[in-house]
Image (cartoon, rainbow, N blue to C red; front, top):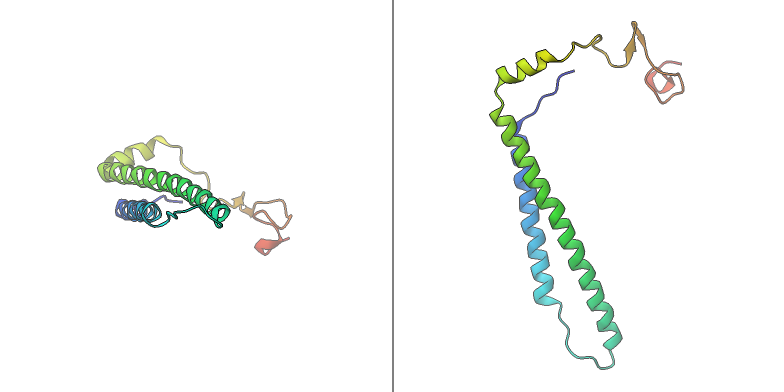
Length: 129
């Protein structure tokens, strides 16, 4: 099995996440600008519920933005690391790892592995009982 990383795809995903972070900030700004209701007459209890719901949504958007923004930073850093890693360095590192004893991870001694329970490789879900 070979692991192949495409730094450009990672960079694109990071950019998409960063754009998502900006959209979340716009949604938060919209809430701040357009959800204030004045007056506490007969609809006072409704307004109080509305304000609690908006505050809860603000908190959720802030948390979502933190996750999306910092994920974009981490993925971008990973992309840059892969862009800096040249093929020769990667090959030298791979040479330090032990060679795989088999090419098919679901095969042991030429036979499919698994317990035959239907859920593991070699089981009935994989065409064998």
